[in-house]
Amino acid sequence: MSSQATTATATADRPAAEPAAPGRPVAQWLRVGGLAAPGLGAVRPPTLVVYADGRAIAGAAHELHLPPAEVEALVKALDQELAGQPATASPRPGSPTFHDAPTTILGVDGGDGMREVHVPYLEHAATRYDAALVTARDRLSHLAGRVTARGRAYSTDRVRLSAERLASPGTTAEPLPEGVPLPPDTTSARKDYKGHKATAITRLIPGDGSWHVYRLPTGGHLALSWRYLLPHE
Image (cartoon, rainbow, N blue to C red; front, side):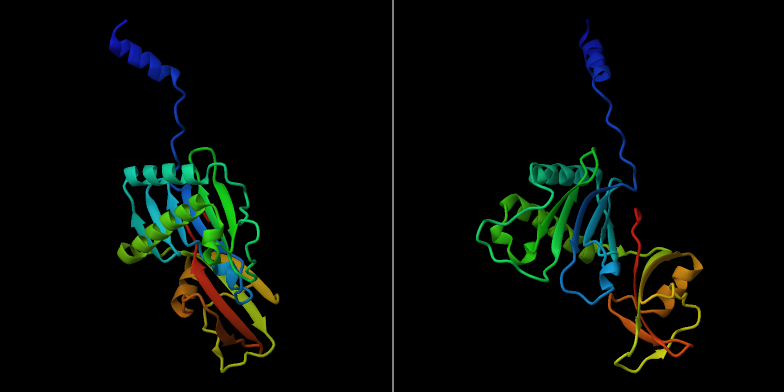
């Protein structure tokens, strides 16, 4: 049998890898929980998400396209660093507990689904955890900084709006801008919008990640905050 035939047979016998969907996240870094104003957690964006097609988005605010080789190398490295880690990591025995500190979530999808490792208060106790977790965090942090510094602004016509109805605003409030959609009539609400409604929100409400208080026509007050949705959300 010729070498070409042998190679062809070996290739045919090897299971074909399922092609990655372009919009599928293959690496992610999030911070959840911690001490934050009520309701703002609903619009806290992932710190970094990298997609199979090379699109990297930091903080739902900046994006940069990575070459395929870099995405492959990133996934391979994270796959090794997170291999064998529990779903929720624990610091070394005797480590102090940091209350109200966010939990770091590190994730990688090497082809069999997103595998996540939750690391409580990693930002405050990095030396207390497995060095591989810190290396993975630093790898994603470096990339997020690069995306923020070199990437272009990220935007879309899909947003997530968080709202808190207030008994007392505690500050002078302007009238709610005309055209901003009102969320469900509850004390605290989160809703996703797209198209014209999303455009109105981004045009009329500052998108800086903090609360902005407005006076309702009914006389009540509403605190609003929003962020852009990511491609997979």
